[in-house]
Image (tube, rainbow, N blue to C red):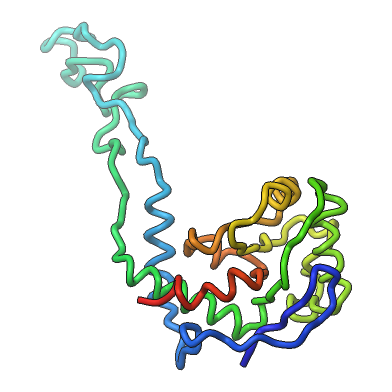
Length: 228
């Protein structure tokens, strides 16, 4: 099994063999979920906070005397049982960080990319060579050419790489290697395309996308980056 290699003009140039690190007998979904869950947790700020009885403004005066009124005794209008009172056992600032061993994360990346290749959602680009900074003539044109080459059949009917009317699609992930400023600036204006460097792989962008486009230089380095 291999992945399709195309040029920026949309021409197919055969298939690339999968690196040995992506040739897996079985995809471990629990491992992928464990790493994805940890990355989600590590993105949480943990700054949630509600006011307790001693932090709510007011309530210093006793509402009525202790005895003789026929009403239940009350010491403050900011009691948790009063409307406008403090919160009992409310959320407090805390850290949600989950530490995942580096080797486990790398193995999870291997399983994610192997699943993308198995589903036909991993496509290799020969290179991304742009002469200037231009979204319309640059990367938008590359995606249009790839779409016109017929690779959309891999990406499900109605969810094409290049389709402006489909506003609910997931992002297309582009994995590059030391890309130029022309490429970065031409690509960042497309809201449904994300560029990451092969040296900074992460589970979330690898999982939550509609397709992965990886440049040939980055593809050649996968063996090194995903070795444990």
